[in-house]
Image: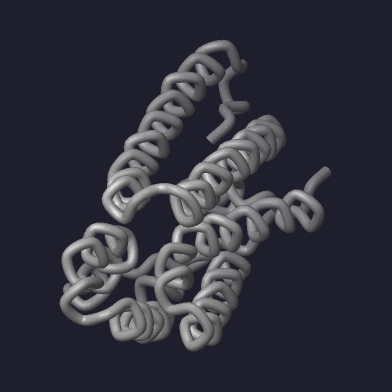
Length: 202
């Protein structure tokens, strides 16, 4: 029987958290506009500052600690590499963040509770055993997705044009994530319908 996870405290997203989150999520689109006039070094170091500041916000602290530390490690790597090759460092940001997420998700499989279980317990602290199994499976699915997404992101960083890199990492990858979330939501409803009462998967 898997031990219950510690439920992270919820925090309401304030305006600063929302702005910083939007910048970090859609950085490739901002970089597409700003990299040429400002230079990749300035743009990349500004991103590192945004990521560091975001980690101090109350809303970010509600996320699982493993995910936060992995993201900070990726940001630190990005900052150091930017002084060696600023253009490549800027382009590698999506790869590093995807890698950080993959590490955090995979580590949670080796050291339960799984990442998806931790998120699920935010809404349902008393997650049943069937929910624990289900969220572990979903965490595996996310790991596979992150491997594939990271591989494409790396290709766009090394081979593709700046425009292709920005469109994939700033738009298409999020559409794919949304599709995965939507598909998981449909599957969850199907699994819930098949489970006996009191044993829903979260």
